[in-house]
Image (cartoon, rainbow, N blue to C red; front, side, top):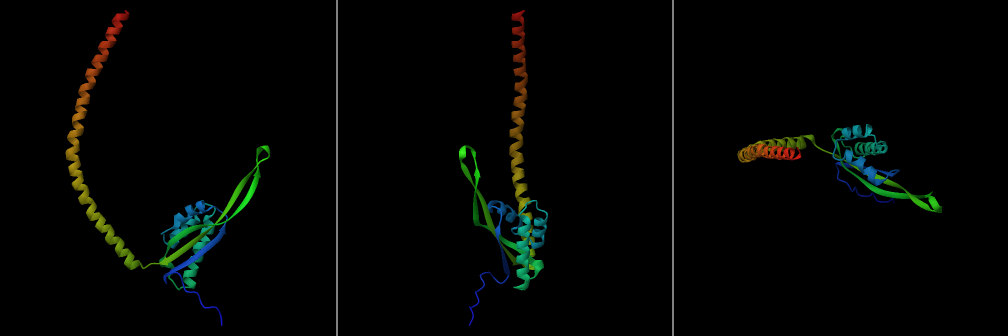
Length: 191
């Protein structure tokens, strides 16, 4: 009698991989995880390949491991995989000390972190049609809203803007004449 098989915690169309003890702070690792969230697997791997972050190579290994788990353990199609989740957690923290002035010491924290990547198989037929329909609906509503608002704004805005400009032009010559007359008076008084 062996141990009973543990039930699967993820749905049938998902696979997971965890990379533990990565020598980087969780805050820095979360920046790299944000690069791949919601992207197709091939796009995510390309982004990680050309990322300038040092830890991107370890994250790439974790994504490749999740893809391998999906293909080998759960018989999912690799071409339809999307990185549905990528979240970061804390791990151990090494504490070191550095000598400082006047005989003191200051602590240096060297944090480790872990990343969990979950890939999901999506159906292109259902998702693609939904996106196209949403895009068409947005395109139909936006121009109608813009033309209605634009017509109202232009009618109300043009006369309001034109009137102050004319008044400002009328005020400028009067102000300049006043300055000239003051300058002339001052000039006569000094002579």
